[in-house]
Length: 304
Image (cartoon, rainbow, N blue to C red):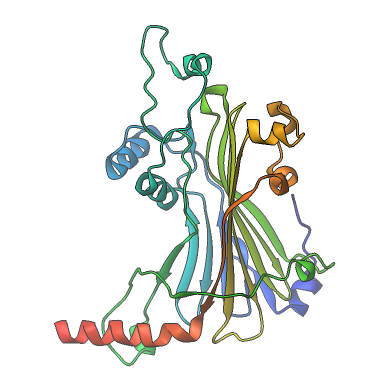
């Protein structure tokens, strides 16, 4: 989906596109950038296998593709990339989805070899994004800390992302979709991890989606939505909603839904047919970060 951006709309929203060749924009204290790159080359693919300690990888990994949202004032960056998503897959280590014996033949590279599905070949991941805090020593009472990577403090909350407001006819200043990895499961379905971002004058919104369809067996959808409303550039608030859905083809057929895989090509259309396995909403308050930054700096000073 290509979005034509009106220069007047950008200016009215206080936004500006990057002028250095990067794809993205600056707006209300945020720098938002997407990178769509080619799949991993063989040498990098081997390096990833060593780091992840596995010989199993998705067919197509877009290792240098990513979405990056940086809040300049606090130095906080939320980003999405394939490597961290695969770390999540490796740690979760779900049992392999059982497929009919006939389907296992399609997993064979050679007719004579035996297929043992002893790992999660669907590459299902609990990944909800990565977080980095970059500390500027000049802005935080001295110290020589240049960079820290840690988990931010997300609080469970009852607030929900206002999807009605997001559906309003507001100018889209920037939109992009980034594919992180994809696998066709040896022609038995699809495993796909993507992230989409949309920036409006009122705020930014993103959807990280893992979509799995094992033909005739199972469908799985893991969505992470984030929304930040512009207003407070110093202490913005981000809402994060996670919703996991899953159902077997057999269970869907029992409810009267089609049992043919061809009827389930668009996860957006069939998502409401899948029962919810897990759902939660969390809030990130940037004002909570400053005590964390201060403690990191003080800890660094004590070790000097």
